[in-house]
Image 1 (tube, rainbow, N blue to C red):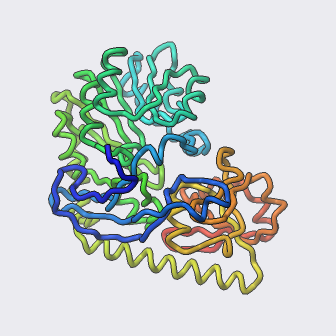
Image 2: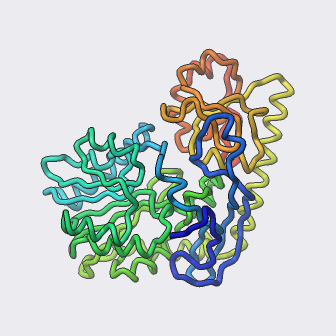
Length: 413
């Protein structure tokens, strides 16, 4: 466990190679989920934010890591805040039940948050166990009848779980691998708890989607890794696991869902080799020039957005935002957008109301007060839910209000 709040990452998190090179630099930003009152927000400590590429295995990761306890002990993100997110996990759970474990069994969800995903597995058929370090979310899982351990998942913790609950048929880890300080220890814990014919399913943000959609704002200190299928396939083999299938759902702006098993007799899907070839030859995920082009796209986006804001302000138009997501912190701080440009940001998560976007004095408000505010343009920072946000705010649009979508290029609707 690291002693300092922030340490430079000198080795590849997947293959331990030191053959790394910084390919993207986003300066220094506060921690993405460090929501606080206005007096504290501007004074928050800032940490280096950049990306390094591994020439040995092709992995992409942050230049620095932050002590996990500073980011996850009191967590304000809730899985069920968004209906779209809720439906994504319902469909995901239905697939597991129908295709892999229709007769019930034991399921462990790592980073179980408020228990939304586990709650889709019927209590009478499935033994459901969650683990998440956010102590404030444990009570929400308990209300759903789910046992939840309030701790980080490690190999050592897996030994305790195994002693008390035994092995598991299904282990899931959704959008947590990039948060884990020691991935090898994490996967050792999974291997320790997975039955011989069990299945480990994990969802991660897909690097290809980030580059294609220019969603640089998904780069923040909680996300240590930016995954691709090729490096992941090589990595899991170290733990006697084989990738047997994958999917690329739209969740979180574009995800990679990986299916892995200890059972070497399970047929490996042919589309895996095809996707890896695409990553190498078509998407060029393993060429450093790709990331230089990415940096230029970010700079172009910043220039375009500032131009739109300044032109609108000349016409006495007021701005607000919608979606106080973690990625909004990266966006506003790197683009130098402050309370001088945006009056406030609306968000559906009640836990964030009355707080500020880290590093700014921009207040987060309940969307119910939107009609009472003199706003002409809403910047949709939660761009992955843009269709839902626009649909919910038809009244604002009918009154002449405009929406600004920032990615892949800023566009005023």
